[in-house]
Length: 244
Image 1 (cartoon, helix red, strand yellow):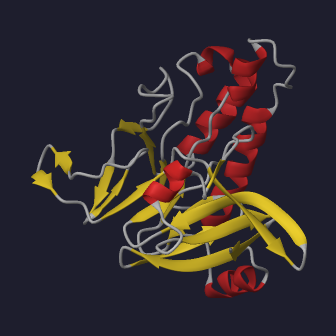
Image 2 (cartoon, rainbow, N blue to C red; image 1 turned 90 degrees about the vertical axis):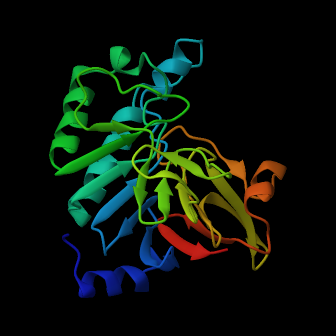
């Protein structure tokens, strides 16, 4: 852990960080699109979608091959700020199973350097990347359980099968997958951005990747997970985060 009370106070004052409570833990929601748990010294990030640009380009989309390096450099700066004991990448870290074959040697080396800078790195499987690419450091897993909280890519609403503890009812879930975004009008100005969505039982991460779109929080599929009454949304906009 590298952060201090003075640093945290300054970041909150600048609206670069919001502090919320979920699952009896304090979470720092960083305007750069990650969440940090001081009590555990864990950093959580979701939906990197590395090499999405090269994937789309292979189908004729005229996109530059800069998304992976941009995503990785942003993540590297954040990890330098927090110096966490553990990083959890919450699924869809790689856009498809051939991502690493398209990644440049420079980007691959940067990725490995970032992973090796952290004592413990967990790759939670996603629907885009059920298997960790060969030669990539870190621990592949289906989900991570901490007390009554599960970290996984998509929500499980009917209890979760745990190999060592039998079937238990998980009270809270931290997930990615949905790439939530929100629109807000303030003083006749319209704003749109990625967001965290938090209910009593569900914590939905924003997508971190450079070329990741989003699903509006008022779409039917999002409302089924987090109704307007039950949710709090924290919008990311121009380096700031605020409750929307």
